[in-house]
Length: 434
Ligand code: UD1
Ligand code: CA
Image (cartoon, rainbow, N blue to C red; front, top):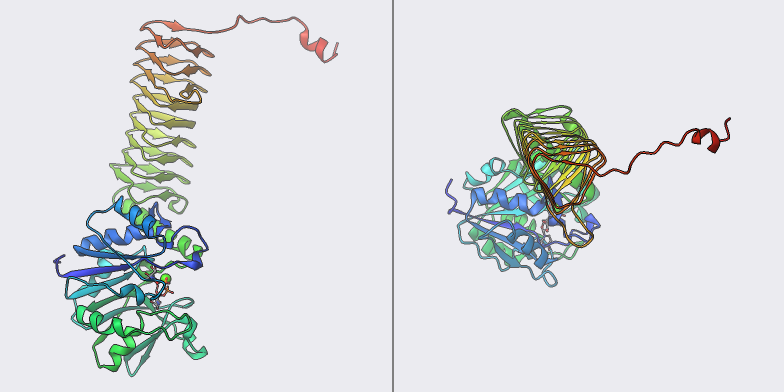
């Protein structure tokens, strides 16, 4: 494929009122990234000339995309005077002869699924699918074996509403078609909008060659509502998890697992039910046990969970993380932290054992401080390490100790305990039992 032969226009200027949300529709996330991100990413595999049409919350949309991509053109639609998908196409000057137009609310699209739009020479290629419930989509009217026109739901007659063949919302036009028909669009319809879809009937009347391409919902579903958003999320999750299982990851009850775009696995990994793995996480040769949450972290040759939480910037290698352990922005190498701990802003070295209930106190209400723990340290249960603190190699911290000294030297025992008192018969006196 030659990326210099085709221009891509992505329509992302609409209000998305049916989302009932203060967030612009195209910025709603699917598998951890905005819908529009997924579409631009796929577009970049196909073309070097990508234009995103924006209007509603244009600064936010543009900023969000510029944080991920370079070399994207943005064009602002005059949505007040020319609302609608046809209005969005005004003032667009594509570089190339062939122009692919994508709706910005179709996050499931893939480069392979777009192949069919690139390899024929019809004046217009449009995408269609058949749905049991065509609600919300424009109906495609086919007569005499030819596509005649697209009727939007709000303009359709009772008869037309029954048509189950719908417009999926992706088109390949020749540049000449765009230059000729976009200026001719009118807004004489139920929504008083300029419909891009009206190009079809005009081109038909002029005898142009319109080629319908049958596509599938799994790649071409449009998102108009929060229900569509969750349905699309399910499809995207299924794709992501299937791809990783095919690459060798073992998943138990994959329907209960959530894995974001951007997560990677290496070697043999086992992911148990109920796990949520997000951001730029890398998991290599590890076992993630039930109901664990891992965010933006690296896990190598380790086992984590059940019910553990690795928060962003954690690096875990050759380590055992057990249940109810939370780790944040810390590096643990060759460590055992089996139960009920918080390890934050810490660096913990090989052979160290972190007992149940150990807490690094990394925050004094204003600033965060680091805890550095060396090799072969034994930290007894229910100890608090008040940072900033450095515990050198070969140290014992007695159970229940509060470490506040800043530094514990190699070979020492640190112990802070109140002497135990036992008061004879106190229980019986207190409860009046004897
Ligand atoms: C559109 C099609 C419909 C098709 C459906 C497929 C039209 C008129 N209708 O309907 O036939 O079945 O997609 O999903 O095209 N947008 C703008 N500027 C605007 C309005 C919309 O850029 O003024 C953008 C939106 O941000 C969105 C895309 O165009 O990404 C589609 O708009 P939307 O309102 O969702 O169109 P549908 O009603 O779904
Ligand atoms: Ca739509």
